[in-house]
Length: 176
Image 1 (tube, rainbow, N blue to C red):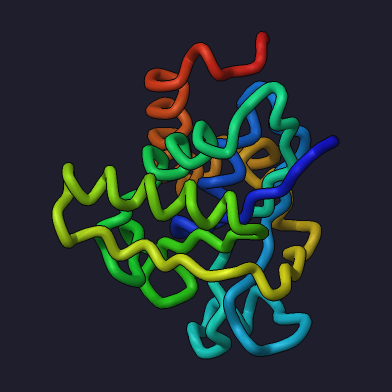
Image 2: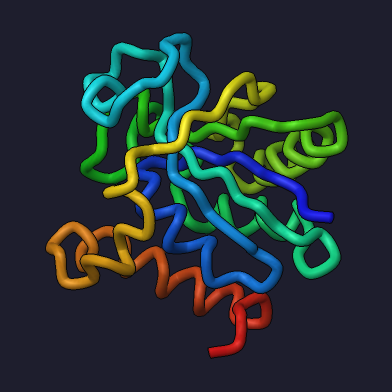
């Protein structure tokens, strides 16, 4: 029986590319969550006025990868200390956010944030809230890195994050 986890850590293209290669990850869907507008579009969310964050919804097999392991990769793949920003991506749509689906996920996320707080101090700005509604992004945003690896953004921003995850979490990767 699969479970779902929803994370926002800047551009959803980055998180999708970082999480997709993990064992036990069945699907990663980019989308929008955390705002009020129904059926938001990329253009609307990119304006920073909808309250939504760019997020990924991860379907995973908890027998193959745990929620805690997904949290580890999530925090390694972005900077949880910069408010409304990841590198060149600026605005509330790029905030660090965990949208939990149940109490065990909420408890696990709070524990992880507390443990990271010992490392980063009060600089952790990751928002934690229940998932209200997830809106999948338009099809052109799905598997963006896979489709456009030579794109300058992919090469400069996404590829280093993917390399970092591969280096730090090699045992969690799917076999080639």
